Amino acid sequence: MEITIRAAVPADAGAIAANNRAIALETEEWEISPETALSGVRAILEEPGRGFYLVAVDGDGAVVGQCMVTYEWSDWRSGDFWWVQSVYVRPNCRRQGIFARLYRTIEAMAETRPDVTGLRLYVEAGNATAQAAYERLGMRRAPYILLERDFAKERIGRT
Image (cartoon, rainbow, N blue to C red; front, side, top):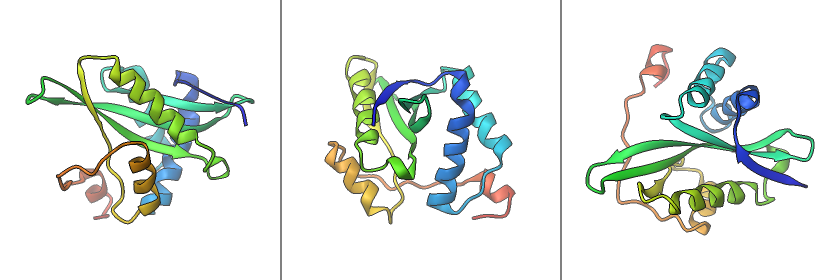
């Protein structure tokens, strides 16, 4: 399969939003509305200060994989961590190295920028397959536990 990795453009918003809905359903059994998903994607595409998407596109131009990067300022390092999020590869395209190519592209971009201090991502505690994939790419477990209060889920009665 011929795959091209490129920055997402506004025309990709619908495909990325559909993938984001699939991620939420697959990983958390959470059904996100099409409107919310599309609004969230457009916010990144229209405001680059929030982050960016990379997409993996097949020979027909279909988005078959994606990653979003957002920024977290580290005052201890005086630089940004890039958070790798919204990782998705369509089920029929998995195990073909698509995520690895997306990640390596992000990694190469980050390594050339002195203002980027590192890469981070979070993964479901029970998703051993994804954890192993990230570790094969050189990521290591951080000495932190992620805590959150998710107002979006609280508002719809999910905890």
